[in-house]
Image (cartoon, rainbow, N blue to C red):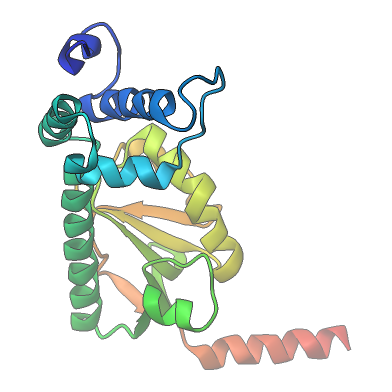
Length: 220
C-alpha cells in the first residue's frame, strides 16, 4: 500500500508535482520488465510526462488519483502550471508585438527566424536596431515571469548570451518586474526592463554603411 504523497511532501523540500514525479518514476521502475530481475528498468521521460498529464493512464488507480491531486494543487510545477505559463507567455509576446507596431518598429518574430534556419532565437529580432538610454538593441526577449537571480542566471546561460553571440546586444523584458541588481550586464550587451521602452531613437543604416566604407578605406 502506498503512503499518501502528501505525507511524503511534509518532510521534503519539494513541490507536490515534483514529488509526484519522483514517486511515479520509482513506481514504474519497479513494475517495468521482469519483476524477478534485480535490475530496475530505465523509464522513458516521455512516458512519465504523459502519465503526469493524464493520470488515468496509471494502472494503479489510487496512485493515479493522488498524482492528479498533486498536479492540480501545485501552483509552480506540473502540467497545469505549464499551461498557465504558456498562456501568459503568449499574451506577453502579443503585447510586445502590439507595442512595437504602435511605435513603428519593424521586426521579425521567432517563427520567422526559425524558418530562416536559426536554432537559438529571441522572441523578436528588429529589422533596424534602436537605441535606448545610449545602448543599441537588436533583439527583444519577452518573459512573463518575475526576474529573480536564479532564473536570470539560467536564462543568461541558456538563452541570452546565445542571442548576443548571434545578433549583438539586446533587451530582456520581465513584464512582472525584476531584481534591480540583475541589470548589471548592460555594458556587455544585455539590458533589462519591465516594459517596452518608448524614449528611443532609430539607427540610420546609411550611417553604418558609411562607417564601414570609411573603415575599409583606412585599412586599405
